[in-house]
Length: 159
Image (cartoon, rainbow, N blue to C red; front, side, top):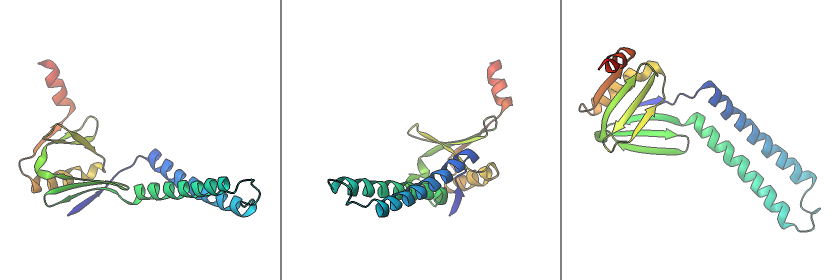
C-alpha cells in the first residue's frame, strides 16, 4: 500500500491557509460579540442566538473542511482498490476497471481512464509519476500505459 500526496498549486495552498486563518478570526470575532453584546440587548432573544450559533457553525465547518484538505488529500493504491481522498471526500475504484493510464509530457498531466469512459487527472509530484504507474501496473498488468509527447502529436498531424 503506497500513498501519494495530492499536490496543490502554491496559490491554492495560500487560499486554503487564508481560509483557515479567516475561520479562526470569524470564531474569535463571534466570541467577542457573544460576550460584549450578549443576547439581552435584543428585543427577541432568538435572533442573536441563531446568528451566533450559525456563525460558530460556519467558522468551525470551514476550519475543519480546509484543514482536512491540507492533511488528508491523497491517492492510495491498495491491492485491488484505487482510493482517492480530497479532504473529507473519499472515493474508491476497482483497479480492474482501469483501462489505461496516459502520461502527457506536453501538459505534464497523468490521466487514468476507466472502462466506463470516465477518467480522472492525477495531481501528484511529477517525480512520483513513474512510481504511481508502476504500482497500478503491479496491481493490474492489463492496464494500457501510453506516453504522449510533442513528437507523437507532430506525427499525428502529418497523417
